[in-house]
Amino acid sequence: MRLSMLMRLVVATLVLTLSAHAQGPAPAGGVEEIHLNGDCELIYQQPGKSKLHTFKSWDICRRGNVNSSRWANESLNNGVPSTVFTDVNEVSYELHNVTDHTVVFFLHQRLPKGWEVDSVPQPEISNGVATFQAYAQPGQLVKLHTGQRHASPPQKH
Image 1 (cartoon, rainbow, N blue to C red):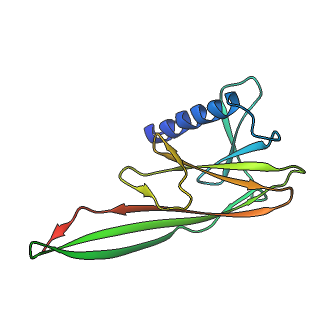
Image 2: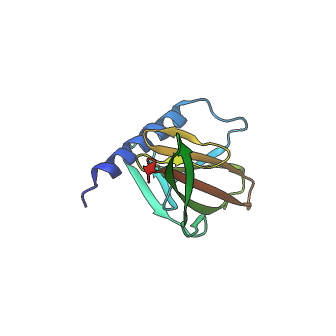
Image 3: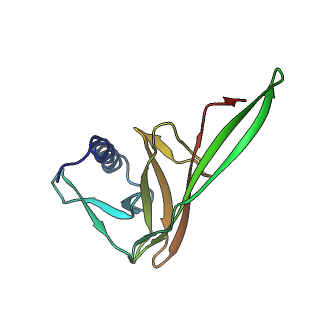
């Protein structure tokens, strides 16, 4: 199956991110890292290999529906009315630690061109991919809410 150029960019970013995490100092206490993409697929590498693999597990990650909204902000500039439309997409994830030790989930979510992250706390953003973190104790279910926002250029009336 051929990957689109965008998917190749996302995969390349994930390889760099995974490599950076693997080569960096281990988190305090040696916390295991679990990497997921925005579709709730686990991303992993076989030991000694460079190819990334994905695996979908409903026991570990569940993605809610995308909730989309749009609103208009109207203003006057030198007496001329204009409107800026803002679109927001929000997704909730349920991340379940199925291990017997503490883990940190890294959720890598693609950010469409021209969009901004609308989440608190702000994730790390690199090459159009937002990376959210969530720690979970053994057996814990963590809810992670993500948001993306896009404002259109002002439209004069």
